[in-house]
Amino acid sequence: MTAPQRDITLRFLAEPQDVNFGGKVHGGAVMKWIDLAAYACAAGWSGRYCVTAYAGGIRFVAPIHVGSLVEVVAQVIYTGNSSMHIALQVHACDPKSLNRRKTTHCVVVMVAVDETGHKVAVPQWLPETEEDKKQYESAKKLMELREEIADEMARLDF
Image 1 (cartoon, rainbow, N blue to C red):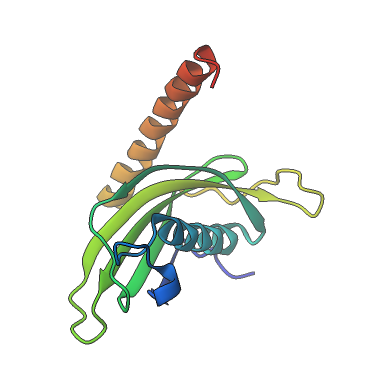
Image 2: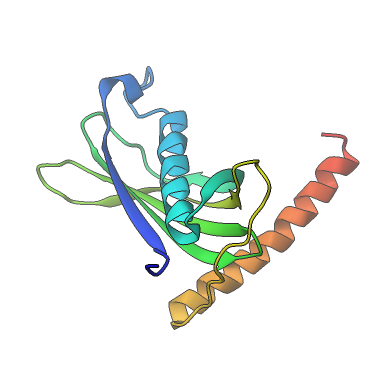
């Protein structure tokens, strides 16, 4: 068996059907690309079919224009028993200049499941480099914050 793949890069061309009335790519189109990259990353790590359990902290920091080359980089930054926290960064550029700029970033949690939809174990990822350790700690902090948000939403009956 080959080693799990920790990261993946998917590329898309922003097409006219991806654009809103303001001439920029719809946030929903970007979120779809993020979900596709998160799935490909999680499946590559776990060797299993995976489902999205959480997508959060999505920050749209710059617009994407029609005709742009869009690159979505996904990387495992934390693993639980069956879950994988995937950090994603979206960059866009004019394909003629290749002058990349960050447009979006977020974290998505994917869960590996079997043929019946039950959770299954995934290979553990352990940080090695200093950057890995920072990402790992950030993922743990985000888990704590999500619990606080969930508690507050339950209290407000959302």
